[in-house]
Every structure is written in structure tokens, then in C-alpha cells.
Length: 253
Image (tube, rainbow, N blue to C red; front, side):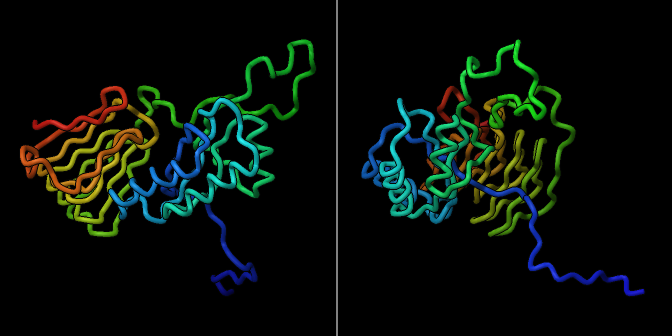
């Protein structure tokens, strides 16, 4: 018997970990959006040029019409990013996404239908109830992390190391153009010349610890700082990074 199975399938389809940024729109102004995103791309081209992004419309007072959304999508493209979908929201957002031919990205669930829209207790139970409105980007519950992932040696340029549901310890250098990501804390016992992103699923209490700080970018729970030039008092030093509100702070250890 031939142990290798033959198949006529045209492709394999798998779901995996992908890096998607979220563009939270605060006002319907395509020109201003393009200018702001262009500024971000210029500041960190390796991070944002041709980055896949999800458009989050949940912070607007009302959902824009199709023409306005189309203009916002074109603004994202003009800035050098690639819109791939809308953030999950209300049924109106879902209908808008269908009309625009875009998917809803569940990872970025931004808002949910009001509780009043749920079926009354007197009504029969639904045979296939919708999943509870639990934000994917909420802070992980204590005890969720099962282990710590270790990476021994250099993380090379173009390489990405991701520690899912745990902390990450790197005993080596993170090179320029390399990326280390963790749902928990990141400890780098070596130089950080590339990018480090902790609290990747929204844990605002996550921290980054680095022995030799020369980073391109550091981020915690989506809040980031880009460095074209490292401040003299931090360059090559042992530092820690943490969040206070929406501000990412860095200090020597």
C-alpha cells in the first residue's frame, strides 16, 4: 500500500496566527484619516507599510453610509495600508460589511447588540444560541497562562517568535527586523534591536524587560512607541516598559 495519500484538492485551508492592526475611526474624515495613517507609516514603515488592518467604526456616534465607508477604506489604502475587514459590531455593521463585500473580524469585536435586544424570557429558547458577548481583547483572567515559552539564541531579522497564552523569555539578541510577541510578559536577556509586543491579547498589566535596549518598537496591549533614535539615557541600558492608562512608559531598571 502506498502510505502517501493522493488528493485532487486544489488547496489546503488552515487558520493560523496572523498580525492584524486595528484602525479605530473617531470621526468620518477620510482626508484626516489618510494624513494620520501616512504619518504612522512614515514613522515605522517596517511595522505599518502594507499592514493588514481592520476598520473599527464602533466609536462613531452613528454608522456612516456606504459612500463614507468606501472613502475611509480608500484613505487606508492611500496611506499604504491594506484594509481586510470591519470590526465585529452590531447587526447594522454586519449588514454594512456584506454590502461592502468585507468580512467581519471577530478578534476585534468592538460593540454588541444592547441587552434589550435579547429574546425575552417568555420566548422559546433558541436552538443555536449566539455566543456570549465576551470581548476577545479583554484582559486574560488570572491563571489562564499555563507556562513560559523560552527562546534560546538570536531571533534573526525577519523572524517572529510568538508565545501564546504565556510569557516569553529570550536568552539572546532580538535583531533588527525581528519580532517577539507574547500574550503575557516579555523578558529579553540580551539586546533588543527589533520589535517587542507584550499583552498581545489586551493584557494591560503585561510588561517588557530588556537587558540592552535599542528597540525599533515596543508595544503593550496595542499601545506602542516607535524609536527612530533611542534616548541617550536609555540606549543600551536595562529597562522595563509598562502602561499607565494609555501611555507606554520606559525606565531604567
